[in-house]
Length: 581
Ligand code: PEP
Ligand code: MG
Image (cartoon, rainbow, N blue to C red):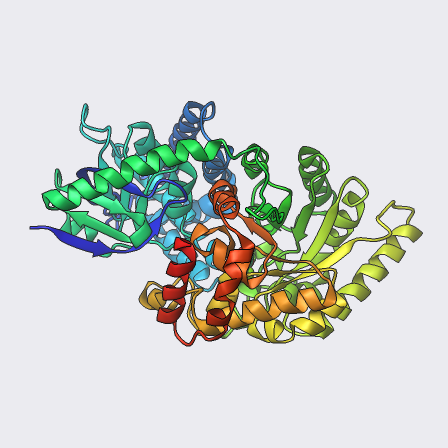
């Protein structure tokens, strides 16, 4: 019998896969409480260290196997895990538990993991919250080595073309499976910004994540279809569906080939209006894809990763060296540095002067991003000084996240002035002028867009947060994800307000949330008057293709319908019409 399961579809380019299911059960080892005798303690600690070393060697092996032919951001996932293995925060507490309580190495790791999970659950930012997955994956790997368990491996000779169904898979697992030639992934847990999703996207593997009970409902050798466009997995399809999806997959393949030809073509509409396409980056390693896909600069650099991969607070020179190398790689293309977007509960231990005792009642609405920067200058000032220095070396802009009121802009301007003066007094060369922009991702800021446009050099719409705050829907919460949509008329009205305010004040407006990188929305956003889009590099060509096939003039006939939208359904209908034009 044919069944359809729903989740969240991942796929920038390839979204359809057809293959036989390979279900991975219990990828995480079952850890029982265990103890050792006093005389065994030192041996147990040595066993733990040996397992850590095995894990390190294993990850290095995976990294060296993939480095030559894979996108560098994928390598970065492995690097993150290698860095974690170096971190005393991960290994020392279990060593202490073994030493003081005589626990087995596996159990000590497990208890420490449970402790870390509690801390991570209080993190507000969805991306950074997924760092919990990293800790889980690294600890699971060590535990597997302790228990002598093998890697995820498919049955020999049957790997190519299989669709792997798993509860949760680590980046290392996914890379291993990718190398075995799998054609798709169905994962029970995670959302659109979980690591499995990001990695699947980077590797171009069609995937659906957040498919609850998939490992129970799907069986080895079942014929599966992944339709990531429609967030669906179909098991045991009938002949007609199979035929339909085979045709769609073939069409998609030839389209992807054609997309590559757009790399060096201009991003202009049929009626010759230029649209600026920029890239979002998180890691330095993302730059390769930025250049390969001819982005016109970086519209969003999420700098918080520098803080997250650090055991303390990065100092001014670390910031400077890092930014300088990015500026050099970009060779004159603009770099928009978003100042750190961490929250009070999102910091590593060493990062908060206020210590760990501070708890946000609701972190999403608490001390984060610009609020934190204003409250904790020791976090913000080294970054700001580095930005002012690096701006002498290339076109660098500052972008402030999570603005909600104009006072924040005034305070930031004042801090920039004071910092510049202080640096000049210290004889440190820094930029006399730097463009200051703000992210509009809080409804209050969108409603006050005119005021922000009058005070800032540019605005960038962060739809990921704007949607979550407008609709009161946590963007990471599976349970309410069905309500999370860019097509809610309230969201569209706020976006329109920001674009219009930018026009009135002649201030450039871009969009850097996920909506900007989804080709489904490209025409709608063009109709709304958006001229600059910033997105993951992998989406640039698909969006460019839509732009090149669009006549702005023809789109105008949908303007009055756009203003009359009163429901998600009516917006979907309009989108369909616009996209069929
Ligand atoms: C956004 O909110 O749209 C955005 C780009 O910021 P982030 O996803 O980093 O919160
Ligand atoms: Mg945001």
